[in-house]
Length: 75
Image (cartoon, rainbow, N blue to C red; front, side):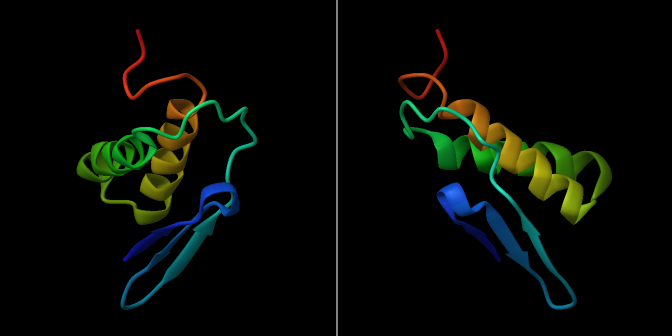
């Protein structure tokens, strides 16, 4: 289970582990699509190496990148 916490980062809980990553400090312009970007970052990273912590960091980075511009898709 992954819990996104906005400015608080994100936490992943599995049967054997708990991982937490802090949010990146960014200028949030619009949160539209941030969850989709977060999930896409996680899936992309996890599909390449199955490392949960690394995937959570990638997801956090993707979501943080997404909120820095207006709209769900960068022009």
